[in-house]
Length: 325
Image: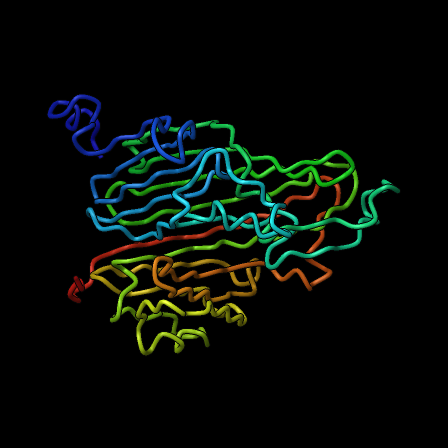
């Protein structure tokens, strides 16, 4: 895009795109930092710097794509270790919630032999780990008109004395002229001992994209058939979590409410994909969950100084289906 021609018509190009750091001044999220952005193609997003650098909100041409929970993204994040490891649910909210970096899944205990700290017999892991409550350092934010993208770089750390010492470098690239987002993560073990490692991307979709006519996509994903009847909220719905190998082409998605959402990733890095169906009234969420395999002893450990990379390509575009009221 020709920035000279753009700025002739709009100072700093703000009629087309914007990127700013704000602090929430009201409600449960008061004090939390958000990077707010919009693109000329129609993407608008909030990145929560104090919630693991996750993509808290995503909309497409004014239509919400992500899920909004009753927790309302509180700041500071609730203690994940509370309520027998279920404290995570007190703050669970948003389009992408990163789970890890040493655990994902239900609360668990694992051997602490790697720590070399005799008073600690086990590592205690809350539901979906702790990285989603960590605060990010903002390294870079810019609208690169020549490259046609918004570029953001964050660094997030998950650390403990006599425990894990992880650094997560996260890069976002938002296309200016398409509904494409590329999220690239690099996890490094900054400690001097091996550490258990796993990551899960909890990609959560809510109404209006999640609706009665919504259907999963993924030609080679065996769980795609589980939404053939759509999704209706029910007061007594009990969540379903189904797990299957990631499709060999690494492509899944959801089509509904006039929006086609697709995810692409490398199944060799994220070999398992779960489906979370939480259709209870007032929650009404669907989670697409590409993840590592914590049972694989060959990959569920990072040696001292070792790095592991992950990439998630998110794409949204219009469909012709009607939006239900």
